[in-house]
Image 1 (cartoon, rainbow, N blue to C red):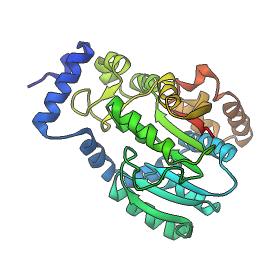
Image 2: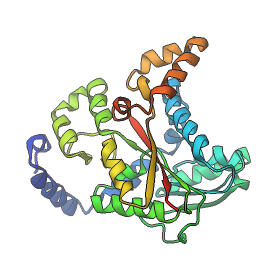
Image 3: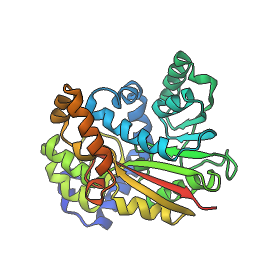
Length: 301
């Protein structure tokens, strides 16, 4: 049996061969891990961005940039949109939305939430599918494309990520904005320090390789690839896009959960802090150190 603890010091090539061997032996692809994980997490994903002031910052900063760059109206694709937190919000604001997600349980919850809020009138379709394959949509279908919260993280091969980026850009109209947010590699290292110090034996692997397979590098999440800011930027610059901005979504609050939640009790100080977060979240020294970061791009005309 492969000793997962010994993996921390393996060369990348040997590690990837070990992963391939284990996947073959278990007959399980990363997508299976992802679907299994999120099939049990639909309610938690719906609550995640609102459960406390700290997590609300990710939603607040993301929404700030969506409002800044979205057209006044149009058809929006929410690719990998899970239970529809963003899709429902913008459908209520008058946008027409198509929600696509890999996990049926996520879509079922999104449909219930949309019906309850009346947003279902503007959500034109709830579709099961992968961000790797948007072939059901013609080129230039959407006035804006969103891929938020980390769907791109769950594609473990470079080819998969390139395919998904190409598809997200392809289905956008010329000059349409594209919004992609991911889990940060540097942020993940800080999370290991603050939340999972018992997983420190894998920290070198997370930094050097950036891939995570449940059972190989500990437990607690599903299969994922952690991004560096320059990696995400490069991935989309290969496509026909102009990168407009990047932002760290938890900003200077990142990893300061208790302090952030405590500050919220004083609304005047909270207002001051949010103003600082919005003013500094695009600074290069902030972007990569947050738990999640956002890329805003525009498809060239």
